[in-house]
Every structure is written in C-alpha cells, then in structure tokens.
Amino acid sequence: MKRTTIILFFSIFVIFSANSLAGVKAYFNNDPEYSYKDPYRKKIKQGQNLEKIIIDKILSAKKSIYIAVQELRLPNIAKALVKKHKDGIDVRIILENEYNNSILKLRTTSDDEQNDHSFAKYKSLFNFIDKNSNGVTSKAELLDRDAIYILNKGKVSIKDDTFDDSFGSGIMHHKFIVIDDSEVIASTANFTLSGVHGDYDKVQSIGNANSLLAIESKKMARLFMEEFMIMWGSDQKKSLFGMNKPYRKAKRVVVGDTIFKVQFSPVSSMTSWKDSVNGLIGKEIAKSNHSINMALFVFSDQMIANQLKLKQKQKSSFDIKLLVEPKFAYRNYSELLDLWGLELFDENCRIEPLNRPWHSSPIDIGGVPSLNYGDVLHHKFAVVDNQSVIVGSQNWSYSANYSNDEFLIVIENSNIADQFNREFDRLLKDSRIGPPAHLIQKIESMDTACRKNKTEL
Image (cartoon, rainbow, N blue to C red):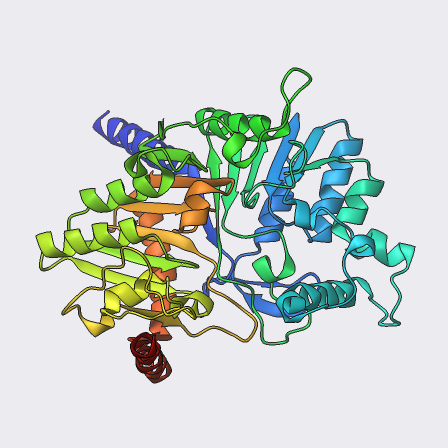
C-alpha cells in the first residue's frame, strides 16, 4: 500500500513538473548542442531549426494562423501557409511595407551609397531565387523560392503598415504568430535566411543570433490576437499601426508556475517613460538583486542605462554584463559607451543629449561578440538574477519605444532563464571585451577636432 502511494505521488509530481514547463519552450538557432541540415544550402549547421519549428506549428493549426513579421522570405514557410489556406484555415499575414514585395517589384540598382545595403539584400535574394544562376528568375523558380510570390499566387491575405492610409509606421517590427487562438510563437528572428539559417551567398554565415519562444496559453494568445487585430482592422474598424494604436499598459499572465508580463509598443512621447515598454525593462532592472546579463542588437535608451547605473551604485557587488552588436556598439548614441565611461562627438560635434558616462566602471562590463562573417547579434534579451528573462522584438532604443510596432515579454521562470544564460555564455566566450583601440583613437580625434572648431568659432 505504501509503495503504491509513493509511486502515485511520484507520478503526480512528474506530471505536475512537466506541465509547469509545458507552457513555454525556448529555442536558439545557433545552439551548439543541436545540429540540422540547412534546407537551402544543404549544409549541416549547429543550432535548432527555427524554420521547421514554425512550419510544424503552422501545419498543426486547426482553425487560424495569424502572423505579424517584419520580413518573410523563407519559401518553405510560405508553402506551408498556402497549404493551410487551401485546407480552409484562416491565414492572415501582416508585413512591414518595405518587404511586402516579391523579387519582381524590388529595386534592381543601387542609386547611392545609402542604398547599398538594400541593393545587397536584393542581390542576395535574387541569387537565392535564381537556382540555375542564369540571371533570370523563371516562374518555376519564383514558385519555389520567392516567398511573397508564393503567398500571392496562393491567394493568402497579406496587409502591411500602409493599410492605415499612411506611408507606413516607424517600422512594423513584430515577429509573432498566433495559432488557433491558443498558442503564441514569439521570436527575435525575421523569417529570412539570414535570420534563421545563414546568408545564402556567405559560406561561413550560420545565421544572425536569434531566439524563439513557443507559448501554449489562451490568455497569452488573446493579448497577441488583440495586437494583431488592431493592426489588421475589420469592416467596422480600419487598420491601425504605430502611434495610431491605443496605449495598453503591461499585462500579467500566469501559465502553470510561469509568470509573464507583456506590453506592446509604441507609446506616445507624452506617456510617462515608466509606463512605456522600455519603462517595463527599467522596472525589471530596478527589482533585480545581484545580476543582469544582456545581449542586445541596439542599446541606446539613456533611461535604461541610468537605471543600471543606479542599481550598480546601490549594490557594489551587482554584476552587469553587456554584449552589443558590433555595428551599433561604437556609435555615439550607444549606451555601451556610457558603461565604459566614454563620450563620442557626432559628426556635428554634439554629445548625445542627457548623456551620463559612468565613472570608475570595470572595463570588463561589456563588449561585442565575435561572429561569423555576415552574421549579427540580433538578440534583444536580458537575464535578471538568473530567474527571469526580458525578451521580444523590442530593441532597447527610442524608436522602438515611441515609433515602431513591437512586443516585449518578461518571463519569470528559472529554467527558461538558464537556457538564455547558456546562450549568453556561448556568445561571451568568444567576445571582445572593453573598448577597442580604434574607438579610443576616434574619440580622441573627434575631441581634438571639435574643440578646435569651437575655438575657431
């Protein structure tokens, strides 16, 4: 009798433990513990196949698939969506207007240096679609490789951020899917080759460092559905994007033993910063006790940097570690410079307004990761006290807070925090910590030049 009771108790405990984690799962496209065959370049790469996870979720849908993503260029996702649409599933997609085009409507020349990046993206996409490399994209190639062409031919409903009768919001920067009003797929990755697998024309590329969450919760799905439908509109209400959307404060959702907080951007500049999405980040930092690990594409919000500094002053043993994408780490507006105690003039000899460089901060507080050629640190996460994770499409910037369509999720779950910490440690292991010599030289050069100009004036 006692043995039966023990077994029954153990079984209940195992079921409870499993269910407590069943509500949320985290995935990383460069996790070295996994590997898969890139379906397009046909090479084995390390990481979890985010595209396959997305496709499996899409194919599991029984009623509806609502997607809001800045850019969708993965043809296998497009084909799965067309299949579900033909099966009678309600499929709707919202894109950033700049990417709501097949290759046939994209620019074919680079008019100036400012457009070199767009032209490079066009050429990379063209080379991907042109499978036989003959310089022409045939209809068969378009139906096989051009995701937007595939969706349009499959008559899948697509809207973008010009459907509110504007020229577009700041950026429709979301990356989420709602399946059957009951599950949310929330990612930092755009649904592109570079965002998931790696650049098609760069052999060394393994994909921008990204994460993906799968959250089984009707309450969470309801919040993301509300955001989607505000943007999509209806017969009674037109599409709303950017600052046209209503303000909604952060909402708290409990799934098993996991607590979520969710908020959507943008907010009005008239809204108190503490009530904004970046303000939610600040609140989580303010509650922290001993550590925060941050891996960020962009970090330019002065108020968040100030909150970190306040925490460091309150607790001398508080451990702060920060990694920033190299393209943005050394800009004059980068808060990584603040943490290093540095200031950099812009081209007009101005210092960022309200800038507050730290003094006497340890040089190993931050740096940049060493990544494969073509890849970027696209994460937007922080692990607080090894207990909770801040993550979303939201960059820690002014434009994300006050202009773009974004989401932010706070996850209070130590197991999920452990997974994000492992990803942070992976990036930290091969990082360049402290300010590089070329940055110090630039600061000294700009300082000399700007002070000379000021004297001459």
